[in-house]
Amino acid sequence: MTTKTFPLSQARLEEVVKEYPTPFHIYDEHAIRENLRGLQRAFAWAPEFREHFAVKATPNPRIVQILAEEGAGTDCSSLAELLISQAAGVTGEKIMLTSNDTPADEFQKAIELGAIINLDDISHLDYLAEHAGLPGCLSFRYNPGNLIEGNDIIGKPTEAKYGLTREQLFTAYARAKEMGVKRFGLHTMVISNELRTEGFLYTARLMFELAAELKQKDGVDFEFINLGGGIGIPYQLEDEPVDLAAVGSGIHKLFEEILVPAGLGHVRLAMESGRAMTGPAGWLVSTVLHEKKTYKDYIGLDSCMANLMRPALYGAYHHITVAGKEDAPRDHMYDITGSLCENNDKFAIDRFLPQIEIGDRVIIHDTGAHGHAMGFNYNGKLWSAELLLREDGSIELIRRAQTIDDYFATLRYPGSLL
Ligand SMILES: *Cc1c(COP(=O)(O)O)cnc(C)c1O
Image (cartoon, rainbow, N blue to C red; front, side, top):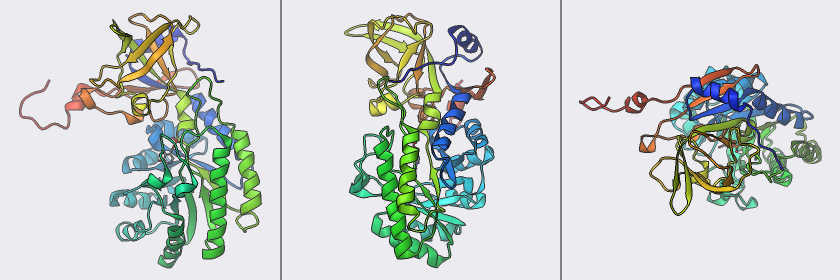
């Protein structure tokens, strides 16, 4: 079981809404710091542990800066994310570029920043050398194929476009060495929103055994192993949060059992968690515009799936509360909708909630990761603002809401649109 709370009282929320109209995403700085600290504690035994925050989860430099203050680096998958890292003061090998189908400008920027480059295919070696040069430290992304089952979010590895097969890895490291690369890592990202300890241990065992074999056969002396992201969060009330202490101590055992005897006891461990750092530390706050009763009861919000796509995209559950009605009986069944002309624009279907009135503030939980970040402008819907609740209780605007001028800014049209 988990409990879902919102860090502002109803009165404080109303003050905030006066200054920053709904909808907006709000992030809790203290919770973000604590989430990272929890992960670091689980790996305190490791020779060196680094979380490379997956910037795509919450691509705001202010968020990246907060995590960097706690020692995190970044995992970037685009030029914009590299620039966000740089703006947040994260440079050098604190950055990993884990990109796929990578354009030259991304490789060039990563090399300029001194980042670790994580290649998605053996053919990218020559492309990288030709367009950007070789990095100080290079890794390859392993795709374990049918050794891992996959789930709805990440899919089956055998169907995934990412990474190299096991056989290709042996050729890839040998080739990179020939080309003059001196320092190496090994990477994978095959689980998503995983809550079970065994899921992490299985991946770690796979990676440690592979690293040991690559060392033995190809003489690759790995500097780091990156176990990827994918730490799940308890979206549902009945979900149990990941037992990070058990994950950490289980991986410690495997480290001693597999890596140390292989002469890899110095290997740094890395993860690139996104969701678990910011997901539970963010909320989408909206106002009820309409109630509609036809074959069902609908509550229409001033936000829509352009502000939070996960329910429409994956049928994902996000817990919902109504400000000031946290303890009221949940005895009304509603579909909670947005205004997009798509019938899947629903944040919840057949959800039992307290009786809702027009003007109520509806709080959608666990939107801190892959929430605002997945926003889009279909139907002319605009991106919301992002607010940060500071540790001192103050509110900081860390991204203003998009305006209609922003939306029209890229058009070339002889008449006036405004
Ligand atoms: C999305 C992604 C992550 C982060 O995944 P979470 O589920 O948010 O932890 C990490 N690494 C790569 C390569 C990704 O694409």
